[in-house]
Image 1 (cartoon, rainbow, N blue to C red):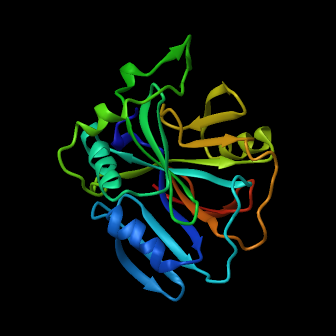
Image 2: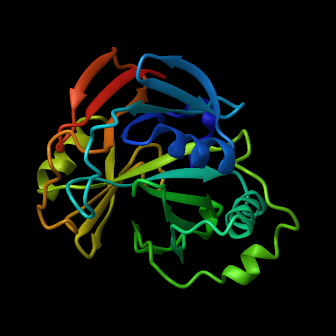
Amino acid sequence: MTHDSHKTLALTALTLRVQNLERQLAFYGDLLGLEVVQRQGPQTELALPGRHFTLTLQHEPSAPLRPQPTLGLYHFALLLPSRVALAAVFRRLVEARYPHFQGASDHGVSEALYLADPEGNGIELYRDRPRAEWPFRGDRLAMVSERLELEALLAEAKAGRGLVPQTTLGHIHLHVGDLDKAQAFFQGLGMELTQGDYPGARFLAADGYHHHIGINLWARGRTAPAHSTGLLAYEIALQNRPPQTLTDPNGAWVQIVPL
């Protein structure tokens, strides 16, 4: 991966429309450890002390819960700096008996835990392996989905804790209706295809990363009711790019800001 000082792209913010704000705050705040940094009207902004990303919850009590799977967010992925940090969050979830844990995978490039927040928004918690250990097929990345030994991971942490301040927004994975159109959109933001042979999915990134964006066809074109809960917007910081607001292939706002 490119050293931080030479990054050309970073994911820096995400906004979710939520139906039950207090329940979501209990999850993101009390369980995962994000702190409220600002409240303005229906919006509550959360962050970790490191301020590497912000999560904004837009409260709309009348919003219908988004059915799964439908076009839009598959998951957003929070990147922890070490295996121990990942294990500590896992232990916290286990100790809390969190009911929406969905599974775990070893992707070769990373180790990942999957869960959903109380309103069904997908979340991946993961740690990267050193780039020298990433699997390649020729000159192409070859991510896999293999079993992750959860007991071994859990043994890395003697105590549970929330997300550490160094946690970043590592990637966003979207259900889309057309892979070619979605790929073209994100290539227009300076990303390159890193893996295109994963069944029904493609992955794109800048700076030699494994992926900043995942896109897939697994929702089979199903759409959610208008104004449903879920992903409203996300922010991408780009080097040498003026501020700009775009809409992604699913209609979410994409705020481009300087890196």
